[in-house]
Image (cartoon, rainbow, N blue to C red; front, side, top):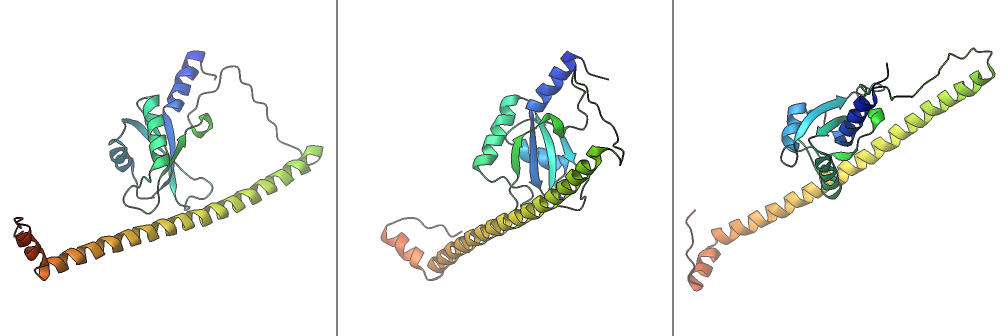
Length: 199
C-alpha cells in the first residue's frame, strides 16, 4: 500500500537527517556508536545494515539518524576532514548522506508503479537477462576484491602512522627521563632560578 504524500514527505525528511556510516569495527554496538557521536551531535536512532551477500565480510555499516539536518551535515563534514575511529580500531569510519534505497522500511512512493514478471527460458530476453546476471556477479566480486585491497592498504598506512607517532612520543619520554636522571634539569633550574617539582 502506497504511503500518503504527508507520510512520504516525513520519511524523506528522516532520510535527510540520516548519515550512512561504514568501515565500522564488528565490535561496535549501538551504544558504543551513540556514545562516540554524542560528543558532537544528538543521535536519534542507529540501524546496522546486515551484509546479506557475505555475512562474514568486514566491516559493518549503519544508518545513523541525527536530530537535525544541520547535525547530519556537520558530522559528514567533520569525518571528511579528520579521521574518526571507534574502539581504537585502525579503520577510520566513513560517512556520507543516506539515500532512500538504503532503508528496508521505506514506504512506497505515492504514484509509483512497478511491474515485473518471470522470464520464460523461451523468451528472447531470457538470455540477455542471464548474461546481465552473470556480469553483475562478476563485477560485484571484482569490486569487493578491489575494495578489500584498498581497505587493507589504508589500514596498513594508518597503522604505520600510529607506530611512527608512538616512536616519536617514546623518544620524547626517553629524553625527558635522561634529563631528569643526570641532574641536567636540576642544574638548569638552579641556573635560571626556576623551582623544580620533586614529582
